[in-house]
Image (cartoon, rainbow, N blue to C red; front, top):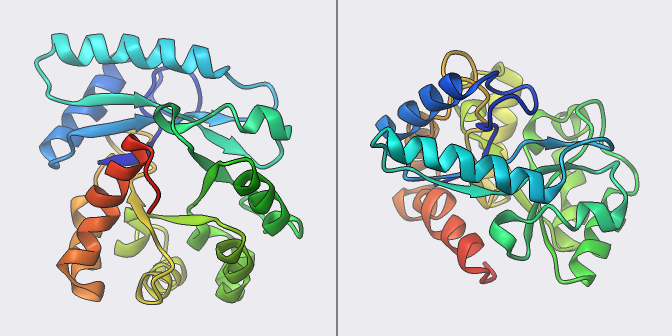
Length: 231
């Protein structure tokens, strides 16, 4: 299962049209993925959660008509700059989990406070691609307050394989070894450059933390997101 994928057509920096979305769906299925969460970027002027669900339903109809056994679930990658109540509306499959994206330039000083507030409201924030944040690259221990506040972490599969460079690869593997990763997702944007592929990253994870713990990142934990159960 892939809990973070920009597969909806024409809504953000992912595929431009349905044909490109369908190409991503075919690639995901060929990689062994059976479920994809459609999680477009959500900024201050972004899509509403209802609009995302409508787009996801349309994509599901097209994917099914193409004979692909891929389930499309709705969600969103909410920016930490969103108003608190708005951010709480972009839930993964209507459950308590949500994807939370901090700026790619830095980790805000109030990041632990935001995660604590979300957790206090019964939400379970999943911080996306922390290994690609420059502050965390310099000091991974900055994640400890986020974890203590109730946050979970999602690594990008391509980070583990070196697709974002050696420094990010080293950080991702460090976080994995420390047990500071709860999900492995593609963060896919395209069928050609940011692909919806998990298998190569999963292979690295198996070598680093063993088959059972690696399986939890892409199957067991995502299944709890769907059911709404805690990890």
